Amino acid sequence: MAFVITSPCIGEKAADCVETCPVDAIHEGEEQYFIDPDTCIDCGACEAVCPVSAIFQEDFVPEEEKDFIAKNRDFFNK
Ligand code: SF4
Image 1: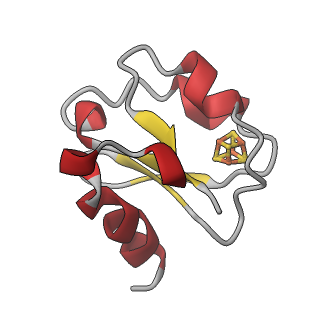
Image 2: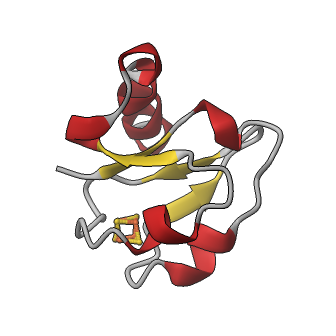
């Protein structure tokens, strides 16, 4: 289980989450930030500080954003 960054981050990249994450699981991509699901400890701190509500726990990612579960994981598997 991990938290996932979804489409509202694209073009926004506020990055408030990066400073908040206690385990440095959030890394910068070209268009958005991503969460490493193998590093995330599921604390929820990032979700609380995201100004555009782009972050969800994996189980609560909205239906139309579900592609982002794989996108976050794939970013770290390159
Ligand atoms: Fe980092 Fe916690 Fe967010 Fe996971 S849920 S990315 S550990 S701040």
